[in-house]
Image (tube, rainbow, N blue to C red):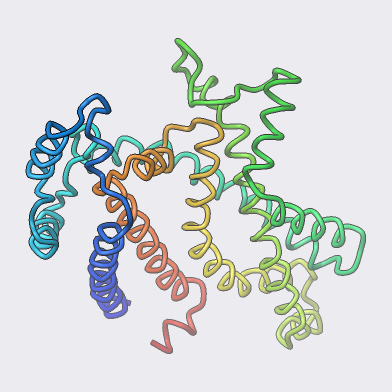
Length: 319
């Protein structure tokens, strides 16, 4: 286990550095000049050129790209992601302030999605080709097919505008900071994101349980007098490997869905900050956001690899 952990950590660090280099190159080679967004519209002519040159020198953008890269990489090695071009604040602090709301949104949606998907997938597998199976499968297909932004607008229209049951934006109402108000604001964005996650998980849980139920060890358990519940328990545990893989792959996808829903519901998370940075060509924030996603993906893959050894001892023995 320790050897696997060390190997994975070393490879993850190498991959992270490669991603960092790629992000820097892609963002810097993208069309558009961030300096144009920083020059006041009333400044024109020769004054505009002088102002642009001064701003470019202040942020080190007048240096060759190679020099800019080594300066940025040196800062990255010490945890310095640079400063925002638009407000001058440290990028690390800006992202850290937005990390909590995004983690709350994603974590709640993943947990609720799993709580829905596991029992629903098991029911669909045990009652294969029944009305329950067809209903669960149909709902999951619809939830996957319909875009989250469309469902978000529908939810706002019905629950916030028409019925006035739920708030339509933000994490708190004006003058409110209590937990109950937060829960009300979480219902629609978390519910929609959880629905999308559950729809994905259900299909893998169903197929995984069906595959295990058809294996010889399940028939052996029943033949030796074991109850169907005991056989199902063993089948569910052995099918978790595929679910762990899907869960690790789904977390970055959930983040992309959270970016859309954060815009729709004005949720003050990292996704909303990334859209702001993209609109204003704020390179340091965009690179920092990309690095956060890369780090999240690598951590999820590492946890998935270690989970395999815990769930299935045969994996640990093979390694």
